[in-house]
Amino acid sequence: MSGHSVLLVPVPALEPFVRARSEHYDRDYVSADPCFVHAHVTALGPFLPPTELTPEALGQVAEIAGATAPFDFTLEELGVFPNGIIHLLPEPTAPFEALTGRLWRAFPQCPPYAGEFGAVVPHLTLDAVSDEVTAESTLRLAAPHVPARSRADRLDLAWYARGDCRVLHSWRLGG
Image 1 (cartoon, one colour):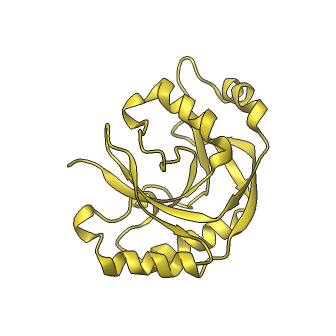
Image 2 (cartoon, one colour):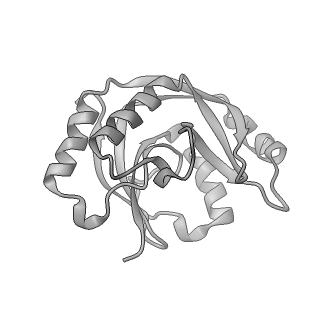
């Protein structure tokens, strides 16, 4: 089974927009699972392979989620990474950075983004630059949804695989 798990904070306020963009550029990753939220800020990913999602590992995640107080944030500032990923930056970023730090310390074998990038930048992916898509065109499309105010109150363990995106586990922040 080819795929990977990811720990993420769902952002339901932007789900209609992000899901529509996903349907546009990569239908293979559009989920039929009603619990799956395409709009999210990644807390730690890729996470453990299925064989390592043991009760002990899930218990560690539950403990970290339970010790993390829910928090409010706003997504308004648009950014583009060097690889062309168009995203929104959450404000404040500190609670996301702290959550990622706690998870990474508990699972050092799972560096954020597989260690591909230097500093970890919390973000919500909106789209990707292409011949038809620019940061400006994405901002125009997203304008009715931005700024988006949201509350981080849940941590999901999601499975990403072509034709099989779904939530494996979910924990309330703050227990």
